[in-house]
Image (cartoon, rainbow over all chains, first blue to last red; front, side, top):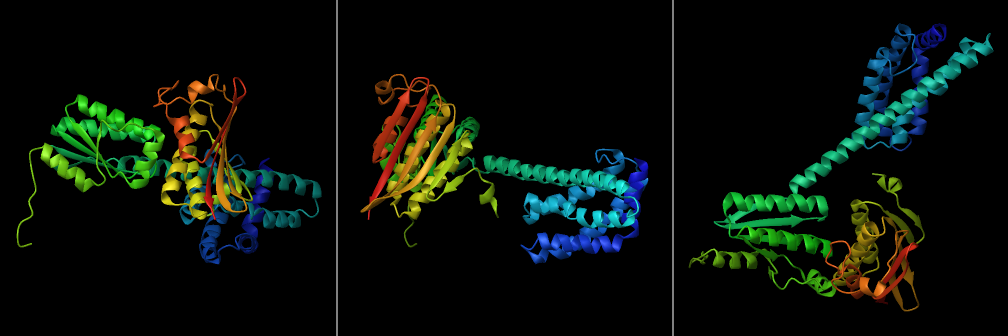
Length: 285
Length: 145
């Protein structure tokens, strides 16, 4: 076993420059999509190859989960993560390692030309090693993507639920985007929380930015309004566009008990009246 | 960038099949339906009606049918063009269809307006269901050329 890996290590150490050129040629033919990425490739490949040779010389293990492979894994992880940011596909990412197979096999065959049996064994071992390294890059790629998606989901959840105070005793909740269960829960809680904090009498829920109001959304709105009312605050729904109004009527959702307005400005005027305030236009402006 | 090829959407000609397994699938379906309606030149009101109907039925498939799939297809006749949607699940089926179509009746804590509302929002509405054999709902929206 140790004999085999040192042979692979020896080949990589001896023919490093030739392997690098063969590898890059293979990579470039697979990455015909975008030539601008090849400069980066050379740097990464030139970094990876000596590290691989060094690792193979120091450790007898070809199991990349072992401690001896930690540097190689780390470098591959960095490369994969950079590729996620650059918009590479998983296949392109994995090809970074897979493209090294062909030149390595070629030089292994040449080095062991007198011993075909050992050559085929060496190639099989090397093949498994590169498969595992390639799969590792995909694994990291996938995890990095999931991280991005998760972060964006959380950001959306946070971003889309600001409760703002418009006036004394008047709150506004501008809703934007899709109102599905988990988000609506956050929205409802933050509104009720703010009502407690400010002692507001009126809350305006603006749905200008909600593209689809179906029965589930309507139900969530009605529940929020009922809960707010229990806490002593009345709600006004604003931002009901013509197409939404028609759709609500066809659906048969009953919003008759709710004060609704076409625009946030209209709702604000109503809210001010109820809160005992008014805004006057000053003459001369 | 290249994400289209990784989405779970199967496209053949003017038809696409979208899975309905999660809330996100419902959002994806709404977007797909809206894109098709926009491409065919439907008015904003007609778009909103059909997308809302699709949202109701997709959620029914998810909630009551235990998930399934939606088939979105563009249809062309001699003098009109349209979008047809089919929602297919292998769930428990609907035992009493007349009751299920009644405004305000719900077995799941909703408003009880999804099925009947979707019927009013679409131009065509057809439902095939049998207890134990699942449910298929077909709706269509047409536009004169």
